[in-house]
Figure (cartoon, rainbow, N blue to C red):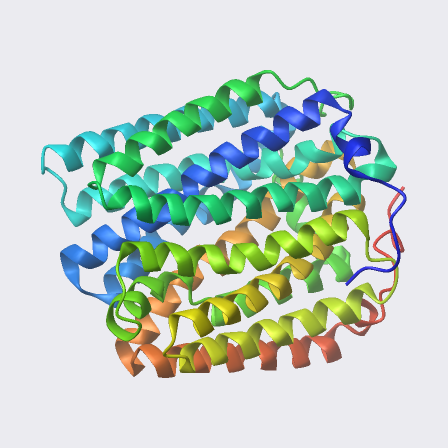
Length: 413
């Protein structure tokens, strides 16, 4: 999905020590987060046998973001971003250590799992905007798109290892993956604390009504950014079937935790392959059209997955789904970071994180609810078709985004 060899290579980006530490920390934290997703999903479904309960995990994880969105953006712009990230990762590690202890002593109830997930969601509400806003300050400006693509590859590498490892470790008991996750979060915290950004120190905006809502106003004023992140929101909100994978694995594909791990890692394989390709071959033309095409492929792949009854075929379809999804991620993230001045990146990234959280976590809740209403397969098919319809509508509503050629085309000074 790129055009010719890019001017940057792996060594160009990783020659910056702080970016290398950031990349490794992202792998550790994402591996842990993905392992938690498998362990919590399997544990909740084993305790309740309810798709609605699976959807509730997504809702509980999402709730802190809309409650804190205006605060976390200001925090990311006023305080040291690496410190924010490090503290959040420590909190996440301690929360998972508590889950491990509760599981070991058989104290765990679904309500306890939801409380832990809420705590992790609150930490990630602060962590995500700081993580997004930090990337441009770790490398030279012309290296930002490649750095974002490599950051996506870190996320997807961890998303490959995490689900498979989580499914494997769960076989030895629920406490095991939680203990490993806690250790990984502590390691990520240490790496994050050692980062030394090369960019200037973030600005310290005063706490006024205008500054609180400035991230929202900034995005509303820039139609390409608004169109890209809202497209991702509605497409994944409707088409995301990740929350239902435990039900597909157990009830339709007749496999166990290891099979769930394979299903979870399949889209990550596709996304990793594509993100590495985009890091070496940045999108130089037709960025808008390619993003819309990718969303349509995402929706059609969701429909195909719902109809599959073979775990091998389902895995191949999820690989295609992951390839399509990462194109939208790279285009959206590049637009947000390149068009936003550093002193506002925290607040803008907070709003962007809200959109991402809405599409992912609230999408899991939506999938669980619709599956309980219409049935597992019909709900997934309707969601996939909905993603296609959204892409077609957005092509009409945001014509400038559809015609966007280069990711630097509308860069703000």
